[in-house]
Structures are given as C-alpha cells and as structure tokens.
Image (cartoon, rainbow, N blue to C red):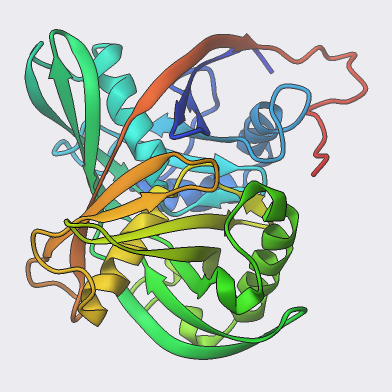
Length: 336
C-alpha cells in the first residue's frame, strides 16, 4: 500500500475525510455499481480500514472516495464510507464535498454568488449549492434525492419497552422515534443509552419487508435510527433536536444531512412542515442544519419530495497516511 492523501473537514461537528487519489481502481459503470465492487474488494476495503480505524481514525470516522460520475452531467462521484462499510447517502459529506470542490478549484466558482456542485452518489444525483462571499465559502445548501415516508406506527420491542417507530427515506432509510418514548432526552449525558437503543431499533427493522427499497434493492435496509426531541415551533417552522445512530451504533455529531432529509419528508407528509417553512434541526452537540422541501418532478415513488438541507463545512487538516509493512496492527483496529 502506497501513501494516500486526504483533505479533512467537519460538517457541524461530524468528520469527513476526502480521498481524491492514491487508491486502487474501483470498477463499475455507475457509482452504485462501484459501491458494490468496493464492498467485495479486499484491496479497496483495506484503504477504508486504514483511514477509518485507529490509530489513523476512530470508530465514528466518516469519509469518501472520489470516483468518476455516472455521466458528464455531474462533476464527480463519491463512495461514502464509515467504520462498518459503505453508505448509500451522506448529507454532511455532500456539504463537505461542495466546500472541498470549490476551495480546491475542482469546480470553478465566482468570488461572489452560488455555484452548483453536482455529485453522483449511490442513491442518485445530488447538488451542493455553494455560496461564496468575497472569495470565501459562506454556506452550502444541498438538494437531496427524492425522499418520502415509508411507514408509520411500527411497534418495536426494545430494552426500554415496546416503542412506536416511523420509517422515512432520505437517500437512506431511517427509523424515527421521539426520545421521550424511550424515557430519555437528546443530551450528551444520555449518549451511550441513546446509542444502544438506536442500534436495537435499527437491527429490529433492518431485515423486515418495510426496509426493502421499492425500486433498487441495493438501497434496502435501515441505515440508522433518528431519536429526537420536539422543541415546538419557531416563526418559520418546527424545531427539533436529534441524535442519529447510524451503521452499527455510530453516533452522528451533526444533525445528519440525509437524516434531516428524511425528517423533512416525514414532517411535510404529516402537514407539520409546509411550503416555505423551515425545519430547524439541531444535533446532540448543539450544531444546526436547516431543512426545507419542494415538490419533486414526476418520478417512480408516489408522494416523494425534494429536501434541501443547509449547513457548512470547515477544513480541519491535510494528511498523508502510510502503512509500514512491519506494523503488527496493519490497517488498524476499532475500539468503540
């Protein structure tokens, strides 16, 4: 394994490690096909392990391999990864990639104004609208894939008792449950119990028929559990605080971009979030995304909407990682 370089960001507190070169070829005609290839390639996966695991990463690390887009209409593609594998969507990563693409000149941008960065991801095509002021990135709003409610009122047995859960899709499938139903609040001191219960709910539903994607089985499965506090309404719309427990018990430090998209779709469907309104969506560490929704063009999923999620990412470092062939820890270890 040769040296591999990364550019690291955080989006609302959640890390994102961009890998644009130095990795083996990832074969496929589309980003969705490349994700399947990466999942089954020990050579490619060694790089994910190296960059995610300790001592170069940590259990909750996140990042992406830059790959060719599906066609020339997009600027590039990305394979999102974390310590448990490869996700179908990542909103905080999309925001970080928009900032990276403009800051590095990968996509040309005017010093003042909004530049679209079009990215192919495993769940479809997303667009990060990057706003610059005086030559500096000031914010990003990303347009997600079509998102929609899947099911409501599902009973799930947990160690906190039977709870009622809703399912929503925002590029990945999320189970949603109020923290109060678990006897908790979304605060850091409850993080380990929230993690455990989020993991229980995910795995209880992951293999159910409700978790099957209606069009593309590669998108099937419950990716995470969104546990939320409802904080009422602001003048512009609902205000919620959440913790998203994704993959196998990983805690999102941000309000979760694709999770925010799923929440926007669920709230719009219930009538809580109307046209022109904004979901103020806070994280367990106090960071914030803003979510809006607009009608989708005719598509394969009835009732689907297009969420728009606003946030910002900041560069945290530029790194060159290596693996000493004599290192007994190899590509590292995970200590949750």
